[in-house]
Image 1 (cartoon, rainbow, N blue to C red):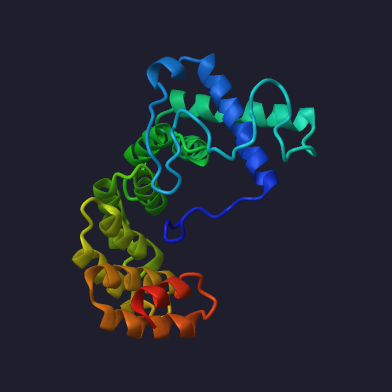
Image 2: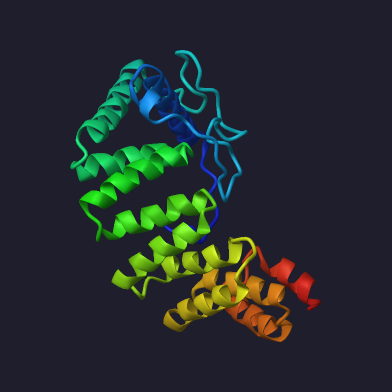
Length: 249
């Protein structure tokens, strides 16, 4: 999964499912030793800024035994089955450290509800089992990116790219890790976005991010040329009006 595109808006049904999962996990944590061994720690998301102690501001209610909004079609039996599956997944991940699939599934559950510290813990467990697995490496890059730990995400994305150097989505995410750190490393970000475009000259997100970095760098001449390239790739790109305004074109 790439971080090149910041948080795609989900429909109400999917939000409801996430809400249900959050309720299940929170309830499970409250009645299980995980709550003692892995306390929920507040942290920031690079894309939403939401605290890990709370769901996103627009998240549907998950308290009590009510069916979350957006899941009116979810029967009690199916909700119960989902609760059992989530509990089983977390239990397996905790009790079977060598169970790679269980670690990945538990990590994905926590990442989905933006409890990134717990997600990172399970991804790190999975990494110990399969340190060369591409999905583990990219997942570690993504979750540390969401935690705004950009130096860490750089490390994981680089390891992933050693396996798949032509993956322009991951390379663009690496560029973003340079761009979003404080202070930003514009030179490395620009070089990395250019490396992505060398592999795929029509990669829209690389073009868009490179233009942004070039404008910030003050290289408006290069940025203007790339805006023309971006228009050819996608004339409806939502960033184009902003680029034209910033470049006075």
